[in-house]
Length: 194
Image 1: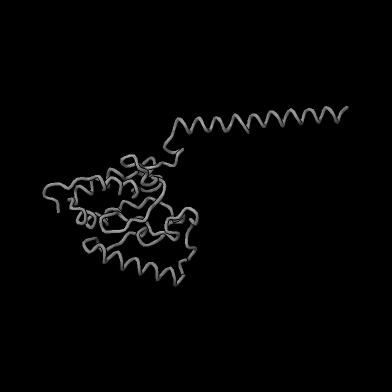
Image 2: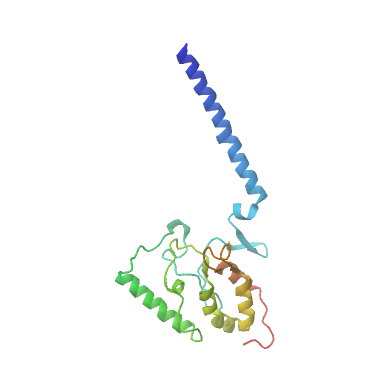
């Protein structure tokens, strides 16, 4: 009799937990996803009804007219995301940083002498769409010249896409390169642009 009572209690618990965690909880999460569709659907960015990216993922942008994201060890591929795992004493890392520095100096001749660290080092995930505000400012002259926009217009666009540190002191200001490049695509050149 005692075993039958315990078995019945276990079956009731199994049924209750199955309904609670297998039906009600997923239904609640689905409802939240329907109420907040952007993040639940991958924060997709659409231009003229066509998906061009996600504000959560970095992308390769080729050409001087685009802001460049941080280097990626995985070429921004979600299925192979991750860092290079190269340590500070690695000769391969030193070589990569030197090559990136030379390429940045060649591509950005009007930029300041100091290159921000995030321009030279890959992000830990290889998918990060954000760069520092300093790295964005470093790229402004090149992007403005390539697009026929004034430096001031591009700087305003960077400022509009800068996400400030939480509460003003947690983390750092950052710029979402994917969103900024989408905004650049729709920008109009101004009269008297450089």
